[in-house]
Length: 77
Image 1 (cartoon, rainbow, N blue to C red):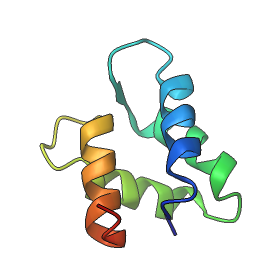
Image 2 (image 1 turned 180 degrees about the vertical axis):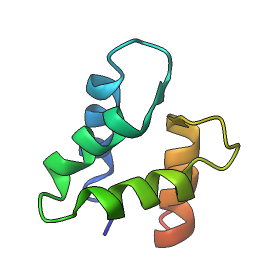
Image 3 (image 1 turned 180 degrees about the horizontal axis):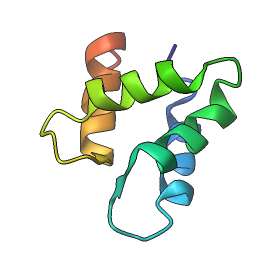
Image 4 (image 1 turned 45 degrees about the vertical axis):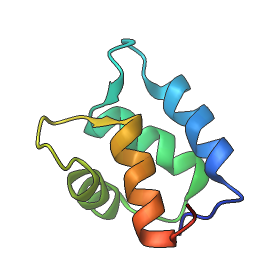
């Protein structure tokens, strides 16, 4: 799903999707951003992914959680 090649694109989308500038993406912001990268993923799968990445359970995915997840699933670092 995620690769080192699309990491820069993911970071760019993350920053653009953080509409309120809070440093984290709520489920709606996250789903909108990920739909650009993965247009065939449905809302349910994107919501589940958000919940999986949100390791501290605060309802938002921050860039650190996202990059940690990417490193874990892809072993890119």
